[in-house]
Length: 226
Image 1 (tube, rainbow, N blue to C red):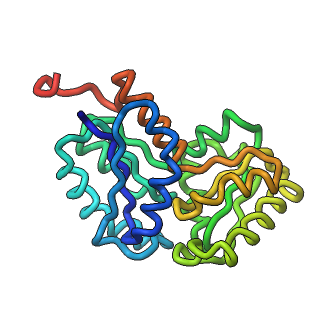
Image 2 (image 1 turned 30 degrees about the vertical axis):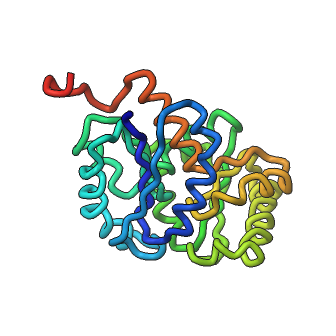
């Protein structure tokens, strides 16, 4: 059976495993989901240069998945999103884009919990391209790298404090977790802040599964695939 392929573009198997656990409820829809780790990627994608450098090997990894029915790029920043859409006529969903679209259905103003302060300009460029800056309440950084997120004692309290600042100081009424490595903290963050929390890989997988089921794609399939 064809499979939705979720690609973690960094080399952290810990992040991939957390993504796999986070999307477990979505397997009940019946479409197989396979999570892959890009071995050539850095341990965490924390700047634009790292994001750009993984595009070519990620495209190669995607093309090797001969049973794919669609793809999810599981990095907040959607590196290689449009390149992969050029490469295939299968559905391709980026977790940043999907998270924002989902958040707009759950609240009027969304707040983003970023990992590092230099991640924020990348986010703002993407939100500007999407035309949603007027719905952005704030984008605040934890000051933690991707690897640090695996330590709940270091990261969860910081995420809760940042989420509350986005709520109380910036006026956010929905939160987006700004890194796939935060996946395991959605429920405690939601309980602590009292706001809906969008975990981006869950949002993207949900969207991709719907597109696969409805035979939707960013471009018409070629005659060879019809």
